[in-house]
Image (cartoon, rainbow, N blue to C red; front, side, top):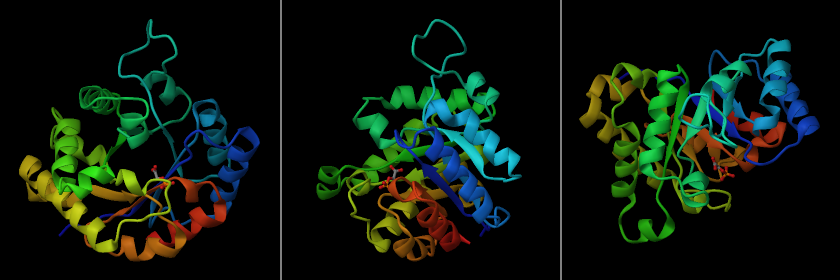
Length: 255
Ligand code: PGA
């Protein structure tokens, strides 16, 4: 089976203003040098993308900068939106798509999410496609059905060659920001089902190379066990990504 390099993302969401964001970037650049062992991305809010990218670059860090959102069209008359070309200008190389807060708070559909995935790949970005079931769906026994539907929809039209730029983040909605983490067995089962879906779409060889992150109340104390599961290749971290010490604890657990 292919060896997959762990990949950990810090999703800062609508948190951390300029001084906090740049201080965190500096602390991570100084404190985590093992980017040969773990791929790392941080996703600040739009106004700070450029300065966080500059701080990381100045420190010589290989930590990447990701955007939490964008619009799938090219530059044009789309008031309030940000294009992929603009994100590239300010040093972004990774984008999140389909995060549960965008699906369930902002109301993004699978159709829009798929358009974003395809546009981001066409623009040469790396994509973290987030999927995950809500609590009522888990309780109704629909966990795999929801995850697979979101995976199939999200990746519609994506070629096997493009899959090298795709990471899937499995984030059970009920675990995000709640302090409740999926059990390692439940998380591993969900990841294995997603990988099986990737096998049916792209074949075993490609599916074996795709990284699947876990997200949802991941912290230094539970990261090692989660990342030790066969199909868990790192994490997408919210709350625990806002403090250098916590995030570095998770990065070290991924090594
Ligand atoms: P959390 O968020 O770590 O705060 O649960 C994870 C995410 O939303 O990506």
